Image 1 (cartoon, rainbow, N blue to C red):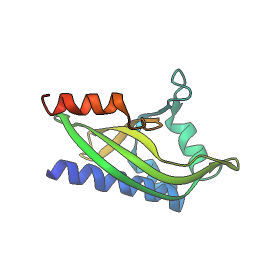
Image 2 (cartoon, rainbow, N blue to C red):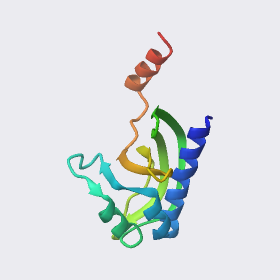
Image 3 (cartoon, rainbow, N blue to C red):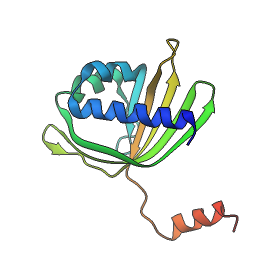
Image 4 (cartoon, rainbow, N blue to C red):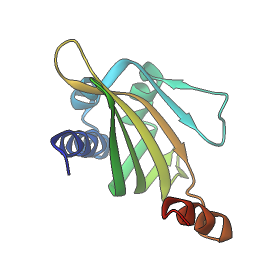
Length: 142
């Protein structure tokens, strides 16, 4: 694992554990001013930073969260993308919203020298099957 990958994964865990603890101060530090969340059920809608922060410690609560199958790509100086499967238990206004979810997070190095997440895209993982097996064969050069 590269230093950048370890840093981004550590920051991602810090962000999500702050959500579990309802630690608004850490959440505010982790989110870039232009942060947006897009979920696959409503791809034309974007939840902005202010809205996410307003609900993350009140109406949208998480009791446990962990990542698996993490990949981090260094796209260019100061931009990294992390994909993962998130296993979590959360509720929005008493309605369950639980993992697994496939997440793609875009991280940007800010002017202050701190990494912040500027975008999260969330969807349900694709089930294994003939289609995903065919893609895996492409990776193997077959």
